[in-house]
Image (cartoon, rainbow, N blue to C red; front, side, top):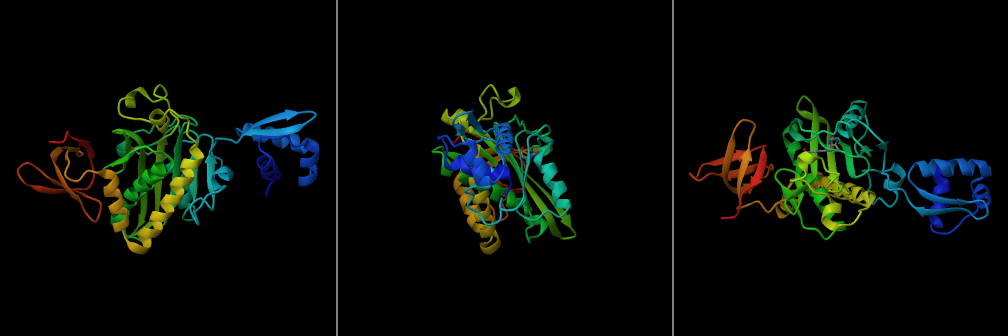
Length: 328
Ligand code: BTN
C-alpha cells in the first residue's frame, strides 16, 4: 500500500476530528514534510482536508471523484472492480480505452472509468454528452463463453443491473425502454453501448459501456437532450453520491452475469420485463430505413421484440428506437 493510501486510511478513521502530522508521520514511518506533500496530493484528488499548524489535519469530505481506491472500498463483488480499475480525469471514450485494453489482454472484470469524456459515444453513431464529474462514464471488459449472436442479451443484462442499482439506492420508479435505455418519469437517465469483438464463432471480448446522468442540472444538460433526458439530481433534488451508484451497478452486474452463466437468460429477461412494462403497449419503432407501429406481444428468449401490426402481421425486431404511444 502506498504512503498516500495509508495516510488516507488514518484520515478516514478519524474523519471530522484533528489528527497531528507528527502522529501520522510516526505511524506511516515517513517525515512530516512527506505527510504534508501527500496531503496536498489528496486535496488535488478532491478530498476536503483542513490543515492547522497546531492541530494537524482534518478530513472534512471524502472525494467524490470516481477514484479506483474509493470505488474498491466496500465494494461487495468477487471479480468486477476487484482487479484493475483504470481511472481517467479525462479521456476520449471509456469504451475506446477498454477496447484497447481488451486487445492487449486485459482480463474479464477490468473497469475503465472517467470523470469526463471528450468523445463519449452513444448507440447508432450518436454522441454521449459527458460533462466533468456530473455523471458516471464507465466500461467493463467481459469475456463470456457464449456465441456472438447471444451478445445482445448482455446489453439487456447491463440495463437490468443499472435499473437495480438505481432502484436499490433511490425511491424512484425506474423503467427500461427496449432495448436498453433507462428512464425515470419517461426521460432517459442512462444508456448502454455494448461493443464486441469476435474470433471465428466465439466472442473474444465484450465491452459494456454505461453512461448515467447523476448530478447534472437541467441547465447542465446539452440543449439537444433537455426535453428527453433527466438526471438523478433533477428527479430527487439532491446531489447523489456517484461512487455508491457505481459500486451498486458493478455488484448487480456481477450478480446477473453469474446468473446468466449458470442459469441462462431467463432470470434476466424476467427482471427486464418487470422494468420494461412494454408488453401489451402500442409503440412505434424506428428501424434503420423504415418505421413500424404495432402492439408488443412479447420480448422473446433472445431479447428481441415481437410486434403485431393492425393487420395482425407479426414481426420480430432485433434493433431500433422505440417510442411508446399512448395507451388505447
Ligand atoms: C446510448 O446511446 O444510449 C448509449 C450511451 C452509452 C454511453 C457510455 S458512457 C461510457 C461509455 N463510453 C462511451 O463512449 N459510451 C459509453
